[in-house]
Image (cartoon, rainbow over all chains, first blue to last red; front, side, top):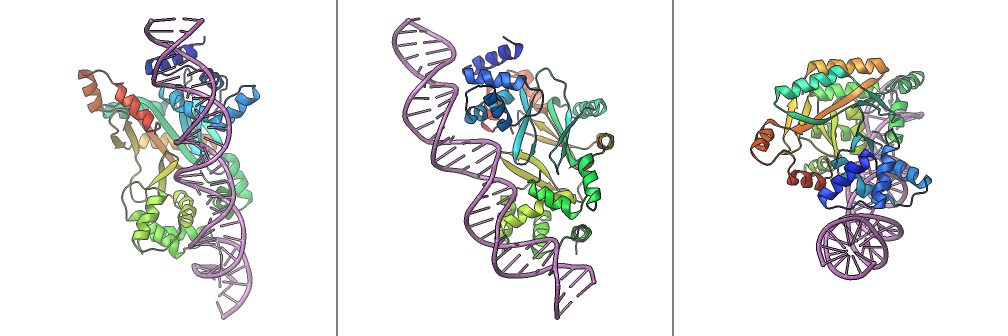
Length: 165
Length: 165
DNA sequence: TTGCAATTGAGAATCATTTGCAATTAAAGG
DNA sequence: CCTTTAATTGCAAATGATTCTCAATTGCAA
């Protein structure tokens, strides 16, 4: 039993919830993959792995994983929620391209420090934080330059087409 | 013409977009209301005001307002996006107490600066950003010290009911 | 005034997420 | 092992925010 499994089963017991095979499968799926994921991706990955379970079960399990601190939701894009696992990983923040949807991770200790300072200033005990910057990524800027500038018509049209984030 | 109308019309012209009566109505609607709003609320408010325009037009205008820096998206809860206007208001970030729900606004220029630096590092052009720190506020920490601990069952249950927003 | 690309409204379409329900099952206590 | 019971599942239908389609309209540059 991995440390996550142990911790998760403890969490469930405490809440009088059941450790079902499905939840086990989902947990493994989450921790066997080290990138952002959304429900559909997770579902398909598990399916390809031969697992049998339904989307609904995953949707129903997500809040449990969030609440127990295993995953957290990161920025919404294209009307879809994305998650990443958190347990045992270093914290980082995100740049989200509102044109192509790309997510760039970054980490900046100075920013973290300043956040702690702010918390101290307010007598606030931080548990987690989320910093997301939306804008245009390098590649989309380059493409836009050919087509007439970052804020050209193309950009706006494309953003609309791609369900602006 | 108000200063935001002027600025918005400049923005549109630059992008070869049109300043339609509908966009004007939406702009006024946004700035005549000083709280968070979602599209449905804005739509109904304008309707009650006797304005004739469709939801679709509002949805289509939102990206323009975001991109031109007039509003920003503040949270996605239960599948719905909320916005607040920004123009003429200083930017601020949030401390969110996960026990009592209090929101404390703060501003830190140093953090903003560092964010810009990060963007430069990645060749990223920021449009807007969001920083939210979740944790426990001063008052709740004080209460917890007397009572039974920060993580009361109610807290956890309520968080689940509200879908971890 | 004209030409035309941008915009609009209305409702249909989309698509992620949620829910109702009947059948199944984990887990606690015999 | 057996029973009991509330939790869980899968499926499909429902929901609900957002986007799209398209014909008709309109802002605005020339």
